[in-house]
Image (tube, rainbow, N blue to C red; front, side, top):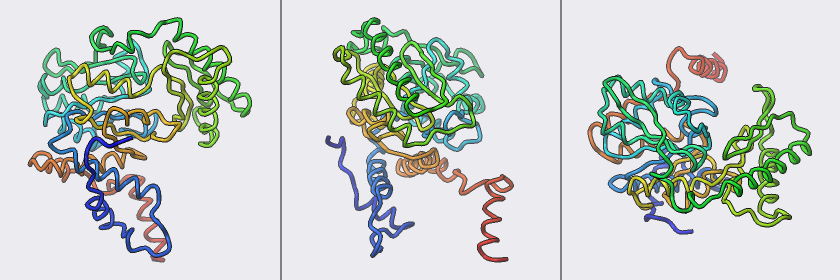
Length: 354
């Protein structure tokens, strides 16, 4: 496909080369990761003055898998600063908690705590949304009274696109039945100890014990098996769009995908694709961020630290004093006294032989 903007790739390469002189290497060619970083930076350079909505994946993009936003996370300050500049922030996640806004409040509690501290206005608070289950449940942030910020569900008839409204419950049930059967068969074939969860618009599998991890390659294979089974089912084609993806620790099949979710947000808020950028960590063929490329500019990250890297670059590029100040406040390296800091000191001493 094409790009929504021009991409200043040489400028981005020069930025990368300041820390990693890729063009000076003689024997080791540029890696996929380095090429990804160049394209990411080039896209971020084009965002100031253009982007009106930033959408984010949640797990492994805003926070570590299964964790929540914490008040001390710099990314929380960055998100609120962007909202204060008139940029909508929306989390578009596979996590689906229909009718349970408190679950989303818990995931984003660090942001809500900062809003209380800053006494964020109702106008700024209204610029935060969460699209759950890829494209199935929309929640908005409200500010009903001083010191209170709450997530609330938006009625489907207010935001859903004609495509979403055309889905029949019988077709959704058939899709999930087929996907669940394929998922169970694949996990049995792989001899995995997993538990299965069936939700109104998703079905998934994850380890029985929280401390267990399934090999990444196994998760990839299961996602591809399920995808192929659903697309080529013997009883005929499934009439509902779906997303079968490797969630890094689990495998899920969701009704719809992030293209549909972002498109619904754009329609609801009144923003076009050329003014939207999606940041996520799963852009491979088994990732649930891939389809966002159809309707938005994209930035492919590998973890929350990289998300912070690009938000810092964006804030500096915006140039406003409050944006630059926020970028300057980002901590460099682990905080002194933390376990990560102590480990770094031990490694340094052992490396130096002192």
